[in-house]
Amino acid sequence: MLTSLPEDTKVLHLLKVLIEHGLEGMPAVAEMLLNETAKLERAEALKAFPYERTEERTGYANGFKDKTLHSRMGALKVKVPQVRGLEFYPGCLEKGIRSERALKLAIAEMYVQGVSTRKVRKITEELCGLDISSTQVSNLAKLLDKELENFRNRPLGRYRYIYLDALYEKVRVNGVIESIAVLIAIGINEEGKREILGISTSFSEAEVHWRTFLEDLAARGLHGIELFISDAHVGLKNARLAVFPAVKFQRCYFHLAQNAQHYAKNKAMQKELAEAVREVFAENSLENASLRLKKVVDRYQDKAPEFATWFEENGPEAFTFFTFPKAHWRRIRTNNTMERSNREIRRRTKVVAIFPNQQACLRLVTAVLQEMHDDWLTGKVYLNMESMES
Image (cartoon, rainbow, N blue to C red; front, side, top):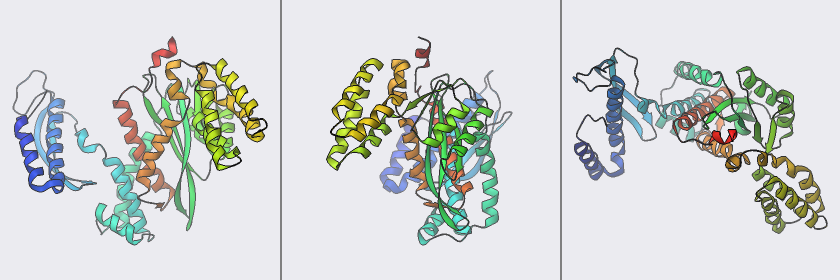
């Protein structure tokens, strides 16, 4: 393991800062950790420490450059290691900065366009400083937007499972606050890891918008799809059949159980109907689930006839997962991976509340999802795709 200072010395120094300053010392601790990690990253890239002679050396250390990172803990003063002989920038200093930058720009645009409130001014002061000009916002946006656009438009390949969903954000359009749909696609790649495949904003989930979204994915090279997982939105269903008519569809059974509650005659029956749906999907085969569905339908023919008719017609749409490897069932029978992503997006966008325009909304959502995408690719395998071949 590479190291540039004795471990005991570093640990004792960090503990001393925390003992003396408590939580207020966390920014200083973060600065030290980032600086040490950046130096280790440089040593890894160069395959040698400063002044060390090795045959594997790929370049040379060339001092440091001061930089200020704006984070949730405030401004952090760090020293960016410089090198000669190869291109290098510490990943530890870049991680998390993209979405912070997008959030900062979204708030700054609100401030510049005159739609800020006292709360927004307070956040702007904390994240951006008070003196923000439209020119500064524009220049920062151009740098970030190019990176995010490249991510959204990158070439795609084979992804066997695709999750689709939309969430809504408040955006100011021509002086009026509108609910804008953010369409998102997540795919499982050949290694069994998740990737963000598509992000787009539109005025609704109408078929025309979903069709354009799916056509763009196809134009970027998306192929090999074996299953779409989503809710049963009519616009999405029609678009999916128009662009990818041969691909199977799995209706999220969790949402199906939620939809079932709308057919309850009273509040007490809501939980009962949801449980009736879940007991069908607890079965261990398509045959058993089909038999259980028939029993549930018969049970509620008199007690809740509208539910019985609806479930008999819609329940089989959520049976598709039974035809895929059993090892994948838990991951592909619901759209939960998308729900978790949506929660993370909303955690970040609630700070803005109302976006000044669609571009600001798209920028922040893309930045959050790109960081999530990077974490997925460097993290654990989501699905063992070898099961597909067995």
